[in-house]
Image (cartoon, rainbow, N blue to C red):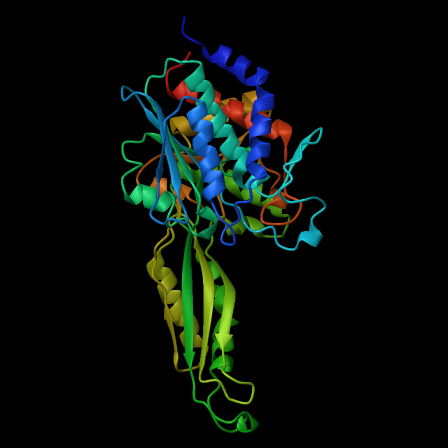
Length: 419
């Protein structure tokens, strides 16, 4: 007799300790990027899949950043991708941690360590969901495809981006990225991330004559940079069917970030000066200065308008010898709020947590964009305590990990015809 959705849920509940131990084991593997190696954690994932009866394949565009692919099911129905990354940001100053960042300690309510929220708990959740589906011989009408990558924290060019470019996401009907979110938020869209480079050219002279001779490139560029905030005035363009998600997003931003006007981060361009480099020696008037600006484009932003605004800022700064370079590569992207993958995750997140769950747009960006660029409805939903992400004393709630796994499993049941 075929296993039912309710029976799968009971199995997941009865074996939740296995999920927690899997998460802890992943945490205990130091997989820092860019300072460490991904070999051990990738080998662990492959072995776990093989022990689960799932054939795993290692692929790599770069020896240092291998990917693991796997598939269960058949080609007679929808194809769902589960994506996660196993690399983590460096632990940083160990004296600022209250515990060993790679202890993987399990307390009464928490799992401790670097990567618990970003995003090894999410990876454990999708791995465990695949194992349960495989071992139970669930009657899948379609297939589940696993994409585990090891370089998301360094830009993803050898991971999800490469997999999509090579066709490994082709024919997919939906994708779940187990990146960290709040339990009441399903991320269905995000801003595009681009780099603006501003370059100022001046004339060198001896520093002792700097007020009279030479043309200081640093001074020139600062006049431009003090007006870069004008780019914030540019808004994205949202369609009527995006109105609810936009409203949800602004509410979440205002609630989480608690800064006056912070909700505008969702639908306005943001420009953050991240790096300034200029000058050769203290006693020389600098003849060159360069600034790199993080430009985030909301959904529907017109890059022609942004280009015009950048040039206008330079012109209005009343300096010569300043130019800019920007290649627009990443744009705001989204999945319809009515997509089956969104509605399935929302249904079971609300059922499991007994709260209202909001599909919303994110102010940052992630690997989800590569699937959306391929036309694949893609969401992010994963266990997390967001305050520890990319910071110290990272942890995740045990209940969050257990519930996320159940939500993945039940959503896959709905999408793949398991009643």
